[in-house]
Length: 83
Image (tube, rainbow, N blue to C red; front, side):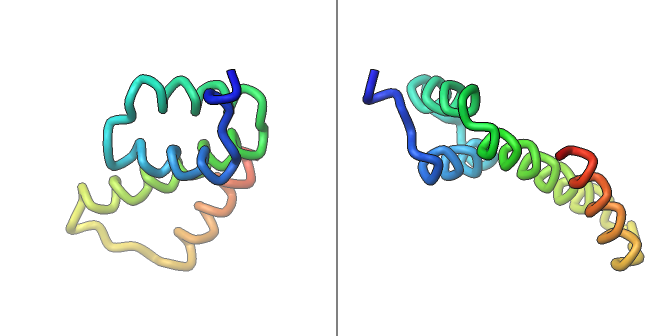
């Protein structure tokens, strides 16, 4: 069982890794177990997913112009609402 437990540092590493690569079964299981007991890492995972989604949305619409200050404010509000 000790081999399945992750540190918060390793959990955040896996959160970021899953956006770039497919996690192995063991990594997915370890991350799922850690997120079930660590609310801070769970919040980090949700915020990271929100940022990834926002970045991918920006890349999809190359003709999209943005008011950076308004976008920053909207992003802050969304992150605050997620907490």
